Structure formats: structure tokens, C-alpha cells
Image 1 (spheres, one colour):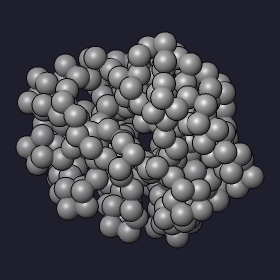
Image 2 (cartoon, one colour):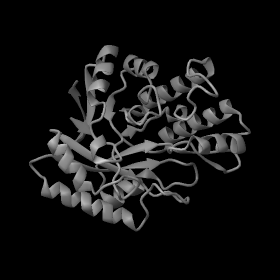
Image 3 (cartoon, one colour):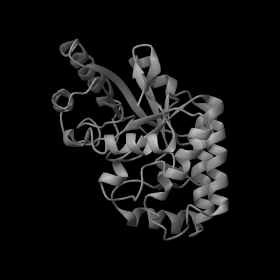
Image 4 (spheres, one colour):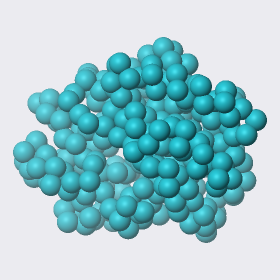
Length: 277
């Protein structure tokens, strides 16, 4: 058992980091990684602040020592990329000696500088942003999401790309279908860039176990393309509470095996390595 995408009370999770470690030991985890949302220069209720960032890092480093020999713990962040707004990822890595970074897009910037929050539990905020910041043009909005993701891949250094088709979560087949040709063209452009940059794609189970999606992120047709392109994948639960750390782990393994994957990526002391499924 491995999980490298999790959020504690230091950002938008529910519990102390040690509670996750205790649960990971109970479930027989080999390794566990913490990835609080890195600070962003916008009002929000989900990310670390500049003041809490070092406190979070110190706590994870304390737990690394306390549980050394029992479980391998890793310090990371999930860093948002918003053009011309967010801090360069390497700044976080250097300042806090991070073991890894997950690069994600939760907030899409339009051509006039407005920001559209595509995540969170409220579908209404997705719909509001689509209408007011993209004039209800879903194709333009989704294209902006993938182009911003591509810009992140081109300009930032990170190990894992987080739920890179999450733009579909609040769509739920209302505005477009993921089988449409224009959408799949965008996805394939991003996959080609992922291969060029050598990042790991996570298989994120949170949308499924929270009943906000009918498939993993990324969905099955994308996973098939990742396999064809030999892009490594990692299974993560995106846990916001201790009981979520291993949810749908075995189901993800079964899906990957069915597609033809024989290995998955994990974080190790030397960086990313591959292990058998």
C-alpha cells in the first residue's frame, strides 16, 4: 500500500498528520506521503499560508524521525499553477527541502485575468465561473484548462501531475462529452507533453469515492493512452481524512492490470521508482 496525495488540517484536510500515519500503519502501508496545498496569492480556504507552511514541514519531518523504521514518510506539496500569479515550484522545493511535488490546476485563469475555481464540493461555483468568465463557452473554458496545464508542464519542474482531467468533475456530461473529438485532441496534446517532460500521472480515486465522478481521474480512455505511450502511473487516494487513505486502492490496481500495466510509480528516497502491481 502506498499513497502520496493527502491533505491534513494544515490545509483542507480534517486531521493531524500523525492520525494519517497511525492509520497507514494499521492498514499495512509501506510508504506514505503528505502533499498539503502550497500557498497561492488568492483568497481561499484550502491552501497553506506562508505562516503555516514551515509549521507543516516541521511536523512532517518530526514524524519522519519518530516513525523511522516503521513506515517511510515523505514531505511534499500539491502546488497550483496559475500563470503570472503562483510562486515557481522550485522556490518551494529549495526553501523546504521537499521530497516531491504534485503539480495541479484547480483554478483556471481567463484572458482578462479572472480566475475560475473548477474544484470543490459545489457544482454551482463551476457553473458560475463558466458563465461569467467564459461566457458559457465550455469548449473555450476546457481549452483554457488544458493550455494552462500544458504551460505548467513546460515551465515548472515536478514529479507527479495531479488529476489532470479534473475539468470533467463538475461537467458530469452536462456541457460536453469526453468522447468528443475536440476534447480528446486536447487530452492527447497534454499526454504528449507529459511524455516529453517525464512526469508521473496519478490515478486519483477521490472523485469516485466521493461520488463526484463515475471513473478515476484520469478516466479509462486516458489511462489506455498513458499505457500506449509508456507514461508511468501512480495510485493515489487524495485523502482529506485518515479513513480515506487507501480507498479504492485495489480497484485501481485491477483497472490498471486490465489495461495492461504491470508496474506503478512510487516515491523513494532517491526519487521516483517503479514497482510491480
